[in-house]
Image (cartoon, rainbow, N blue to C red; front, top):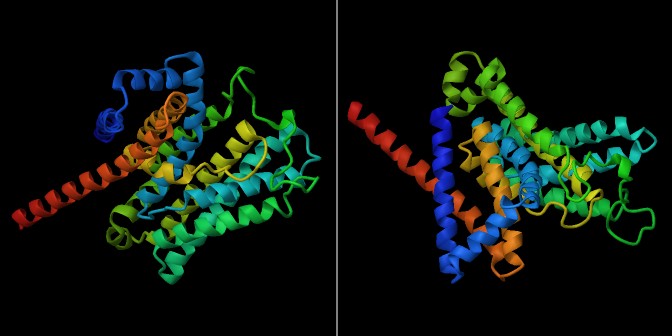
Length: 343
């Protein structure tokens, strides 16, 4: 684990430096801007609570990306799987509204997980059975999910009055437990933390997890040992999409209480650098999600005093992807050079 987490911590420090350079590039006072970001993220009780809330969906979706990428399935469809999970959770809440809230809440969470997993399986099936590149299929399925989401908000899931493209608001009894009524910190944070432990256990402590990783790292070796890579890639995609769908259900029950346009907040795309920055390791993803959650919360505070507050978030997001690709390219070239020398 140490070899996996040290690069993640190094990446965090690197992105902090990138944050400073970004502030300089925008001509913003570095010390004052960092102070506002710190205050909005962890410098106050309200700040760290906002950070935890922002980190929760990113943690779940980042774990989903890590599982898929570990299996060699470069899932770029977290956005669509998130929206599919949101539809699944909202459909369960509406169809089963007569069920007591205590029993209905876990059903909504499970429904979101299942719908997200099934939506991801479409891309997995297209690769395994038809050879369709998973990057292309997951990207295109994002647009399918967006259209389905907007259609549902004006159709079967629309509010009873039929005036606005949104669902009816959930009753207070259906919302996840909040630790303090003065802020948004809810029990979904605990679900995300448990997910880190569960995904770690699956990937590194079970035969299935070993086969998933082997299918991604060396499919030829998997076949030689009578392990069908396609089967475990499909399992990885189902779990990946399920975690993205679960993130949507948690956001639905924990924060918004209803679905409307803008529900996704581009979280599916931000989950990719979260997973990459975490070195595709569950614990690293957890730390990375907290970093990005803090950056979200801090950027919102910075935006109150500057026009560039929210822009910082997207610059750092792009920097994370660029840095990961660059480092991986350098390491792969060194490995190839070393192999050629040995031969």
